Image (cartoon, rainbow, N blue to C red):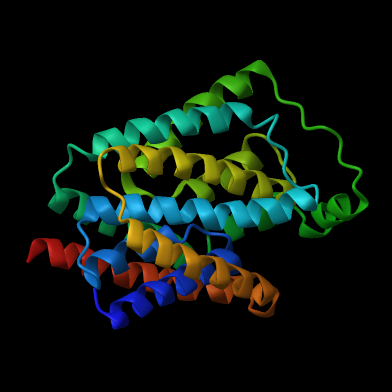
Length: 272
């Protein structure tokens, strides 16, 4: 691999880390298409490598939220445990999926995620209709939130949902973060800040589980992991600094367009 490609991998990490820092979304939605389209990695290796990179970025974000007291893993333990097991199952299923089908599937997955962000009716609409940001911020700043109580039924449902979300994350290497966040808010009634911090930590565990599964099958590129991972650390910090300077709705639409374009390109590549 020449020096230009090495710099390109670092730049890819900067971009993916920036996305994670700006919108709190998994950077693998950018890493996987780039590694396959620009650097020629097989789709399985691209997903495995991206999962490994996602572990690094998620850990950084989780530490920040933990220090702010916004990680509440105990009540979401069922979701986390289910996701870890599901990620292992998903990574093993992916091994038997032909590369062409997996590539098309990931492309379709990108288009769906991008369309949701572009419409503005996904996460943003849900939060604005069911929660008052002002009241959530007041609870968060005051630090007077009581312990989040979860009944046996919610725990059981969390296990099942976590398992299903883990399978999706294990197969495609992405998607767990946003779906974890929605589950924590809608099902477990987390305040927004605690939901973001806890879902990011869950995403760390799921990504780690999936990455291990892919690594055991030889589907992680050490060089790409090191370079993209290093770039994602820097990009994540830069993105976090400027996160509040860009309106969330506008940024969501921009990312949505990018995801849709990447998804269409990946689908077209597999069909040619």
